[in-house]
Every structure is written in C-alpha cells, then in structure tokens.
Length: 286
Image (cartoon, rainbow, N blue to C red; front, side, top):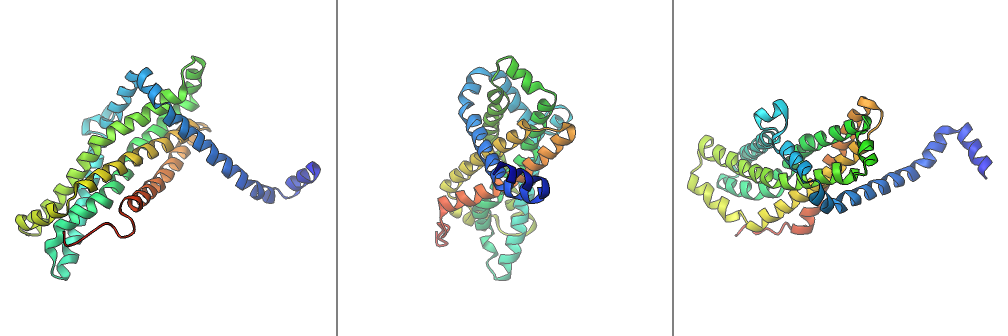
C-alpha cells in the first residue's frame, strides 16, 4: 500500500496534491482553532503580567505611531469612513423616499439602518484595514527577524505577550472608536438632511428619536466587540505564522485582510439573525 501511494505521488503529483488537499485544509482549520483558543485563554495572564506592553499597544492602536499619530491614526480613518457612510445613506434615503413622497422618514433611515448595518460593517472594515493589518505586519516582522523565537527562549509566553495583549487592546480601543463612529454617522446624516436637503430639523428629530432604540445600540456594540476579537485573532494568526521573508509578510497581510473582511460580514449576518431574526423585529407604527 505504501509503495502504491509513492508511485501515485511520483507519476501523478497533481492528482496526489488534490487528494491530500482536504486533509491539509482540515489541519489548517484545527491549527487556527487551537491558536484562537490559546490567544483567548491567555488574555487573563497577559493582563496580569504584561500591563506595560498592553498599554503601549492600546496607545498605538488608537492614535498610531510616528507621522501617523499627527493626524490621529485609526481615529481619523474610522471617523472619515463612517462620516462618509452616514452621508451616503442620507443622500440615497432622502432621494429614494422622496420619489414616493415620504422623505420625512429619512430620520428613520439614519436611526435604523446606521445602527444595524452601516456603522458595524464600516467600522469592521476600517478595523481590519488599519489595526488588523498593522498587527499582522508587526508580528510577521517579529517572526522573520526571530524576535518571537527569542521571547520563547527567554521563557516568555509568546502567544500571551504578542497575541493576547493585542486582543485585549482591540477590545478596549473598539469601545471609544465605535462610539465615535456611531456619532459621526448620525451627525453626517442629520447635517445633510437638514442643511443641504432642506428638511425641517423638527421632522427629522421626531422620526430619528422615535426609531432609535437603546437595545439596538446595545446589540450594535456587542456586534462591534465580537468583530474586534475575531479580526484581531485572525490577523495575529497570520502574522504569528508568517514565513518567507519580507514578501512572506506581505502575503500574510493580504491573506489576513481577506479573511477578516469575510469574517466581518459573517459576524454581521450571524449577529443580526440571532438578535433580530428573519422578521427584523421592526414595527413601523412605533
């Protein structure tokens, strides 16, 4: 049997690789799952042991380093993206609702769709493209320069020191970042509708506050926290296991961004289905 397998591999290497692909895929899934479990499990150890490193990472995630810190780093990027998304929602909502004579419901659009869909997805994409990509590049550079190996030689828990600290940092940073993102989306929608489109601020505020539910905001924050943990674990995995020199780090960043963008959409879908169900838990009559 062993000889037959070796003959198959030598004569038909492409067929052999295809037959072995499912096994390798399952190995990768199991390896990623174990890494995610270890990174999540060691968060308590990281918070107790590596507090200074955790504070440094939080500052780096929130404001950036070097020249990027001058313009606010992630704060400015998230604010600009959600500002644009909220304005786009108001533009399309006011125009579409105006076609059927109910443009007064633009405030409802801003309160309902921003909280449930637009802001979570936009913030998740910004998180993956800024904080997540930076974490992958940093860990990949540490891996190819053997810094992670040096940590293990010094009896430092490498996953706790470089992964769990970043997961905790993402959890802490996402709260003020997401709060600012929600406020910026609300502000841009209101400014366009009342100042540029000419709708009465009283009409806008009436429908906005009627359909802005505190429970929706709470679940939106839960969704953002879930996305933060997922994105950070994915990016840390690809950075931690990067190989092949600088080009390998670049490939790891690309794979991590693609995987995290898919994860952001899947988290949005699953949380929305779990919280709101297929009916949307919505009553237009208030």
